[in-house]
Amino acid sequence: MKPLNFSLRCKTNLAILLTFFSIALIFSAIHLPMQNRHFRTMVKQIELVLDTMVQRDQAPLGNEIFDGNTRAMGIRIKAMMGVKGMLAISVFDATGALLIQESRDPAVYALTRLEGDPGSREKRWGKTDTLTYLAAITVIGEPMGWIRICYSLEEIKGEQRLANLIVAGVLASILVVMLVVLNLIISRTILRPITTLRDAMELVGRQGSGERVEIESRDEIGDLAASFNRMAEDLARFHREIETRQEETNQVRIFLKNIIDSMPSVLVGIDRDKAITHWNLEAEKVTGLPPDRATGLAVDKVFTWNEFPAAIIEKSLRKKKVQKQTKIPVTINGTPRFLDMTVYPLESKGKTDAVIRMDDVTDHVRMEEMVIQSEKMLSVGGLAAGMAHEINNPLAGILQNAAVVRNRLTADLPANHKAAEACQTTLPTIRSYMEQRQIFSLLDHVHEAGIRAADIVKEMLSFSRKGVGCVSSHHLDRLLDETLNLVSSDYNLKKHFDFKKILIQREYDGALPPIPCDKGKLQQVFLNILQNGAHAMAEFPEKTAPDRFILRTKACAGGLQVEIEDNGPGMIPEQSKRIFEPFFTTKPVGVGTGLGLSVSYFIITKNHNGSMEVKSVPGKGTNFIIRLPIQQEEL
Image (tube, rainbow, N blue to C red; front, side, top):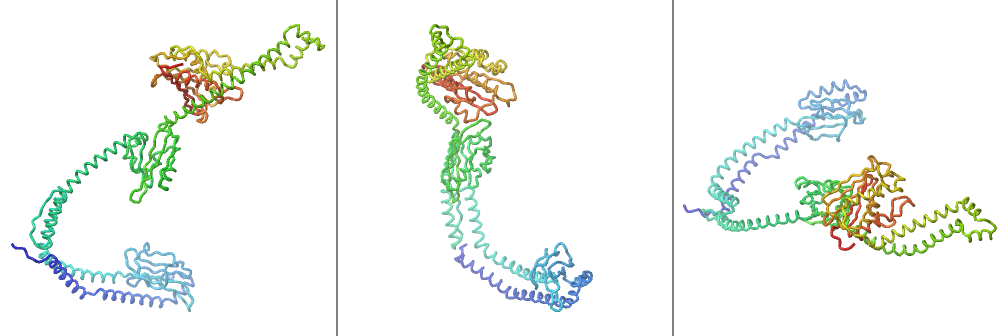
């Protein structure tokens, strides 16, 4: 069949004209403004009735308000409530306080205070459209109170609804007729071709194939079908390109995710509200939270460390600049660590998000401290040598002169007796005077102080240069046991405490090989650590367990490791950082020189090419860790 040459525009215009004239005829017959005017007329009539009713009872009601006769007011209001359509009547005094109220539904119309202005207005109470009437009650021009009446408009509204239903029924009938007529016209010329196009579009949408439709008309529908065929071919080509691009995008996304997850840094993406949006594998390892649980949580709720610098995140989001903080001390899984944290703000679609990067720099910080400590040792070493040589000469003179003085006062020499006789005295008399004035005791103190100063000078010289010792192979376990024997027999140590009462817990690795070392110097290091630990434990009043040393030996990377751990008072971080500095001591003045651990550090690092560090927790104890290489280049 040859298709008609009528255009789609003509067919659409014809349907619009038929619909328009039908609607115009309906609304010309049923004019809505007439219904509205009728409604307003009915409302005015109700207002007139209510106003007449109030004016009629105004004088007696005013007197009853004045007299406070609520019983009479109640009878009068109940009579007024008998009027059809009354919902509630409330009477108020001149101040607006409620005097009496009658209501068909107190839960809806109850009102304890006067509201609104005089007059009437429409209002919806609950599910009922009402006319609320408020009027003043006066007696001889004097205001006595107020009366509020709620009157139902449901009857009038019901009439309107009935009229609307009639109009709707008529419109529906006309609409049905229009639909039948229009469907007959449109179904053949529009709907069927469009349905065919729709099915073809759905097929293209599902499969992305170049589905074609048959052109059945020469109007706009036919042109649309031709355009669709061309579009389907283009879509099929685009679909193939998109699939290729999507596969490449997925590969890139997986590649980037693998890169991010393989990074040793903690990477966390957050939005402007600091809620987590991205979470890499390292973040999961540090916190124990998988990405699905971490996403959406506030970042400062996940990282609950006391030292977590949440302020730099807010600053970076606010200023839109990179913010960084280094060497943040935190505790992860009970272990003290140091982190570097950098916040990178990201601008996207008018919003500011951010990426947080956290790097564990604990090893780097400790290495820096070791380097700084080593530099301190080198710089102070030269100073110590110079001071030792400068002090040694006058110190030798002091000791020698003190010995000469004592000899001339105590020795039975002819020269001493001759000098005494020349002074008209005797040597026994001089000795008696010296003993009475404790001069000999003072000389002994001078001699002891000189000897002590000489020992300090000797330690300073030992600190400042490598000594020439006997290097041989020794087992660390045996060296520790021999040192324990030396400490337990030290008389000066036993004056303050009994070392034999200290519990010794040995955790030796019996399979360790011997190590080349200077036995005497290494034992001196162990001795200094054990003596300091014993003194600290003896002076720790808050201990809850018996004094104890734990001695450990084990293998480490490239060498062997010795640990000497006590359960004494421990040290604060400021003391731990300075413990190996020369002349730094935690003991009272006159008790320690502050050279023992600095010399020990020098022996380990310079004489044995090893390392020495301390880990201490206040109130729990201190652990000295010594690492010695198995292969020594030069001792």
